[in-house]
Image (cartoon, rainbow, N blue to C red):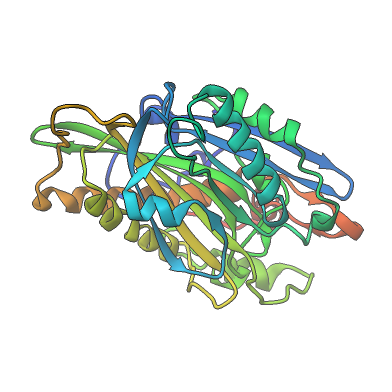
Length: 354
């Protein structure tokens, strides 16, 4: 992951399960991530694109679901996805007021690939998630343009940068600089090994609540800092989950609900002003857009296998949040507003994470 120093490099080992080779959402085969970062002066924002597989996702849809932990956030496309249980576009993340631009561009991207949309078949359900980056970014200026969204979609990779990049450029986490973070877990089962990967857009939490493996690191930092931090959480977190586990939409939804355990272990109390939304998909089954002559065969786990997946998503979510913190750089944005980087503070204050 571009040689960034991540939370494990500080000796912090989250959970019991082993991570995948990248310890990222892209450990799920076929998944790629792309960023466009707009970081100059009062422009501190961007776009992050997640491609669920490398084929035509409109024609080969994936089992998908979403779960709202706290609804103080916005998404596009999750109502139909929840109803039909499938995903048919890439997933885009950006700032709150750029959702329209992202959606319009993603629709055009899908129309170009699929001339039958709106002609011989129905329309397309674009999926977009957002967080509010207005503290560091002049969100009213609407810096995100069509060309930025297309660039993110067209330049994805299995290796990607974390921290203050893409949609995470202007985001805050636990009153510090936040942004993009990722992690994965391998699930060993009697019928095979599977992967679950998580990518977060972190923009939530108050400093005094921050925990690292149960240690009150945020409280230590708050007491040591000379600056006064207003204890207020008006952000959000978008949690994107990928897996190759063979599951039904119902089973996937049960797994997504457990992402909250990972958030809670970092200290989140799911405050009133913070939106926590989880969107997930499984690459194990491709659902054809065109109706086949034969019945669809969708393999799924036995329910007694689910606990391994529940553990995996909690661990990966917890580590992804910590990676979003520890990889982020300090940014000075709109009106000189700034938030320090977690990695700088722990060195300055000499706080041990283990």
